[in-house]
Image (cartoon, rainbow, N blue to C red; front, side, top):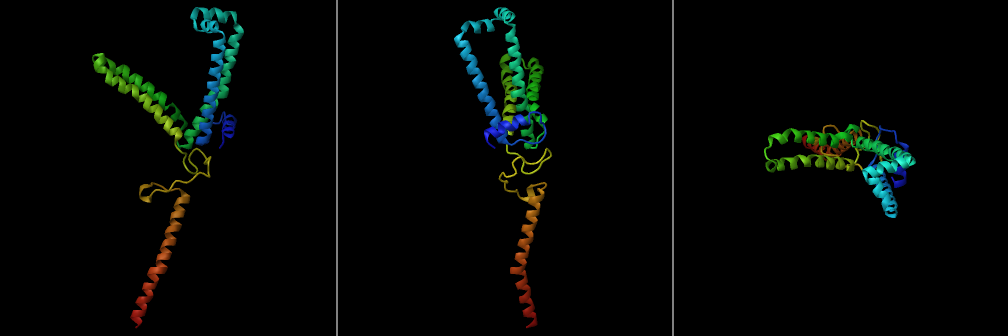
Length: 230
């Protein structure tokens, strides 16, 4: 899947939170959003560079209130900007992320995992800090707790990079049926083989058994019969 097709697919499925999305679709769209955000920041920086007083009026609290009171139309443009961001950026990214998780056979609710881990880490830190004594003694524990959200975010990124499950899964058909099939594991270490793999293994075993019987067993039986008759 190329970049244009991936971007078009994300916008076409902007409200589709079912089914699956392959890695190319997700990462091409992520790159598109990163480039668009960089371009917007460069444009905003160019505007502020040409008018430094505008930056001061916007960033200063007292000056910004008077500035926006005198430029009410600008508030409408800001509202349009955020509405456009939700429709053109946030919403399609949310839907393609859910479908990318489905491709790895994970629920779309897994998208909340980094946020949930961060909240639990903060709550744990709030409850533990009073029992840890001095700040010096508590610092190692605090640093350990602070790394938990980072680990969760890295793991979430790894999940988005994982290949999708081959063939159909509980969320729908394979979006890339022509992808290379991974070599099947030994049956002793697999709980349940896919139907097509199981049928191929059974056919191979039957073929090997028939060949072994024809080349080894049948000649030995004929030799025993010949020896007995002789």
